Amino acid sequence: MTAEKILSDLQELLRIKEPVDLLSVYQGVPVAYKAKLLRVNPDNLLIGFKQQYEAVCLLVEKKTTLLSEALAGPVTASIQVVDLPEGTAVLGQLRYAVGKIGDRMVLRVMPATPIEVEIEVGGQRLSGMLADMSMSGLGVRFSPAEKVAALRPHAVVQLTVPLPTATLRLMGTVNYIKTEGAMHRMGVTLAQVAQAQVIFQYIHHRRDEILRELQALYQEKNRPPA
Image (cartoon, rainbow, N blue to C red; front, side, top):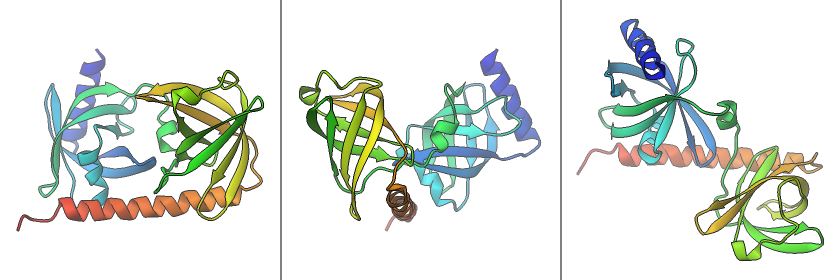
């Protein structure tokens, strides 16, 4: 029934020629752009987009999210085929999104170069690498061999993060610890931060860098063959 509902809603959008919004996440930055429905099949759909550099996300990401008030909810889709010069893509495996779509709209940036983070918990220290940062928290990757007994969900940690403009000393609560390949990843929710302005400036500077990178990638991938 779920698949049938998605299909019927998309067919109605196609009939009335109503575009949809596509939401992608590139290096932590949420990117939204418009697309037209060109064909809706039971197993996939053909979309069209023109001169939107954000659409290069379809080449580098494995999935995207369709948003429209006419849909019963956000719909995730796998990306099957992309023709950037033609401005078309084929999407499949359409399903209602699981979890809060708002989480994907949070501006969370990855560092441009490796940043080593010092973690102190329960009187012990370990080091990791900054995975990403938002105004409310950050992610840190570290080796399983470095994990200490006191480092667990809900633990209070102190972090030293040397950003390019200033070294931050932060306090937060561990939200989760999970395995990512050969590494562990820890998510930390920050307490109220006295250096919030430094974090704000860093995040927005990185966002601008990432969007310029996305524009350059679009130009590169959209360049006609010599």
